[in-house]
Length: 365
Image: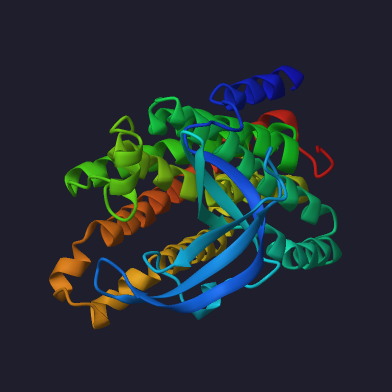
């Protein structure tokens, strides 16, 4: 088991890169000291946008304490909720030309504002789920680690996003199953079923994206392709996103299914072989339906603004329905559904083999 966990960690970290890659202008933190002007400006698109002229004090770098005047809004789309006030923290992009320095607001510092909600979430999760709450938090941390420490740096270095995601997904499945959820033979069954499901998602997603002639350039895909000078294969990136989106539900289903088979085998000695397989498949019906339904609503929520275009947008209905954003969501739903469906019999079959050959009990793990 120790060797298996070490292998999983090695697979996950194989795509890792540096946490910070300096491929943009210098960015320094600052805070708004005063609002000098508030008004409206006409953007190049012809739409009038809110505008502010701010005095900002630098909080870091050699020029810490210096106060500069910057614009916010105008050409950048904001609304009344996006206007800044004294005390708000911002990130400033610094540009140098000789001895001259100019600053523009790159982004508003928003993460600290989420701290109270995050604390309430963690406390509530631990109060309701207790030990399972800790495993859930570990799973969230693992997911963030995979995206921002493994996949993103690998893609920044020019590696294929699909390969980086698949390699990281193997590590996530192995670590997620054996460290966070289950150790023992039921863990082996769960990991096997989850990996089979991920493979089906990748294969079905590739077929769906290719047959629908999707380029991956919808949404921010064009901007990303420009920013990376075309180094990133956007179609592979779209497929990688499909795999990543389905990873959590597949692991959850595989772990639950392996545990259900183990419990059935421990409760009834007469359930073995084909009878245990049938009982396990019957037990999975409600869970599969629930997860597919959950995943559907997650995807619908992610494309809600696009769905509204069906009714209020200027484009015909047929054009919107065949657009890349909705088609990518449809491919993701179908591919993830197929992955979920296959992971159930694979997990059940392997768990039945172990139950029949090793006398599994409820205290196995």
